[in-house]
Length: 328
Image (tube, rainbow, N blue to C red; front, side):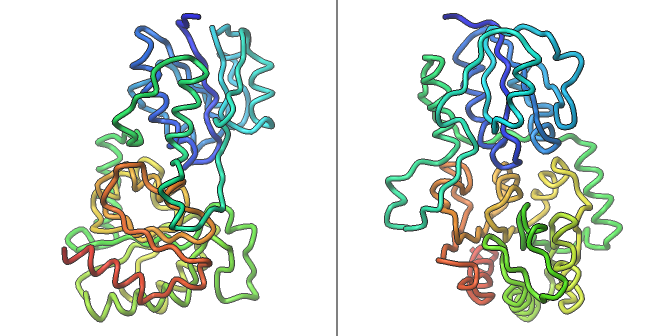
């Protein structure tokens, strides 16, 4: 069946939404004249698709269903988010609806490096599932994520870096935690214990080594407000660390990546934001596999450090990876 209009309810999480951008690009090129409307169930997914050149309309359904969307009819509505977000949206619009297998928010705990060649990245799975559902070609040579930012975003980054007095410094980035770390916070503990978050004591060791070997470099510690307790502790004991938690929007964070020499980051949304830029990523993986949820396929500026748990990733290990990236 030929389609002239498709509504696509995108993933809720930041990284999962970015995984969908190659599929949307493929859809736009495969069906000439197709009108694609993105329905974003979260502020993060809305930010991902804002300004995307492959879509024709964007609806913010993060807090409620937009009035402009209610009663609209599409040739087809597809969902790529959990049912608790998708069902209320689907009830408000008209036309056939499709929930393709494999388009959900993909998770895997597969960690064995020896199996990596047999695994498929989540963005590839999403693209192939969408194409199979619509019976369009899944041949794709570009799985890069789309996250456009504006000149205004760049200027805002420049203003913040100037206020921090690091505009003329060599900069790297460090992201210790992940979205769900706030569920595991305890003011009785001195370290992050979430399974996807890097340990504060090892991050401290890394920053101390960085200060010894590269005293000219400043390290920007990114994160959400929930992670701020740890970034503040890190900045307090390491003078080369600057706490920038919550200073940048998602689009500004993408612009910031262009100012960094390398970015040390756990497998979280910010890793995938960095993947949209040329910055060298040092990715830290424990319960996830970079073959499935790492940077987009084909991206070479990436050093993966993968162990059975975050406890096994040391500051020395990360410093060696960063030092190599900085000097080669």
